[in-house]
Structure formats: C-alpha cells, structure tokens
Length: 196
Image (cartoon, rainbow, N blue to C red; front, side, top):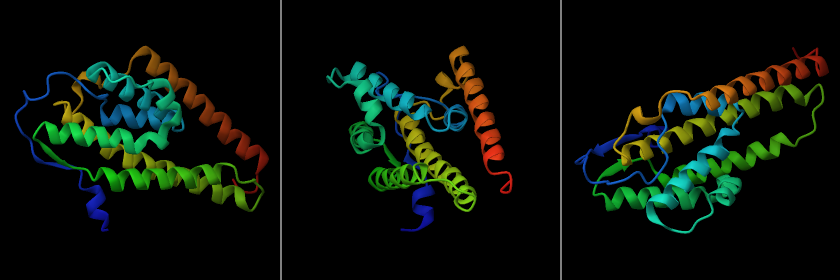
C-alpha cells in the first residue's frame, strides 16, 4: 500500500447537505482534536471514544455503553469505523478514508506503543524509548485525524465549525496536560542527565 493511499483523506463526491438529519458521531475540529490529543499525551482519546459512542447511542437508540466502549478504546476501533462507514454508505455519499486499513494501523501502532511504554528505562534505552513513543503518538494522531475528517464530512461540518473553540474544561485539560508534560520532561532530565 502506498503512503499516498492512507494520506488521501478527501471526499470523492460531496453529495447534498440535507441527507443526514441529526448528528450520529462526534464532530470536532482537527486543530482542537490535535491540541487536546497531544497536550493530554493521548488520554483525550478516552473522551473522543466516549463522545462518539454517546452520540451514536443518542442518534440511533442502539443500547451501547459509551463508558465501557471508551475504556476499551482502540479495541473497539473497528466497530466504530464500521458504523461511520455504514452511515456514509447509507447517506449515498463517498469519502476515501480507508477505514479497515486505518483501523488495522491504529491498532498495530497502539500495541507497539503499549509495549514500549512498559519497557524498563536505563541510560541507553531511555532516549530511544522516548523518541519512539513520541513518534508513535504522532503517527496515531495522524491516523485518527483522517477518521475525524471522515466523521466531520459525514455530519456535514467538514471544518467542524460547531465544535472548534476550546471550552473552559478543555482549557483545564490543556493546562493540566502542559503541567504533566513539564513534570515528565523534568523527571527525564533529572533521571537521565547525560541523555539531555
């Protein structure tokens, strides 16, 4: 598979804007998503999964447990992406986002990230593990952005104007995340001064 295939996240046919009556999935702007994702070291995904499943339950009446599915997170990625793709197909609109391939890649990156997160740190492995985890976080974010663009397109809000500004709660999370990033970097510097 070529790299252009996975990065080609654009619509093929826009379709009429009146086909979807109510929001089935969680709309959020890409800038807001990335800010919350990176500032919380990826923990924002729990909220992201919860909001998607909560919105899906509200819109469809299907009795899913958003909290359980949010905690299951990436394990439920294929189910979530399948439902997004089904909604796109039923709307008569197409969007090239490769949900199965994207789901497989997200799951694989997540497994590797968990593996590296629990590796013991020493002066030799610390810089490599830190760099690898940051790269994996970036790759995961890139893959999830493609999914969010598909959701925003499905919900007739491609630029996510309905959810593009930070709320007070978002600001608290960003501030807390910034503090944790600072503590994490300071601890890494103290524990491994030769690396930094």
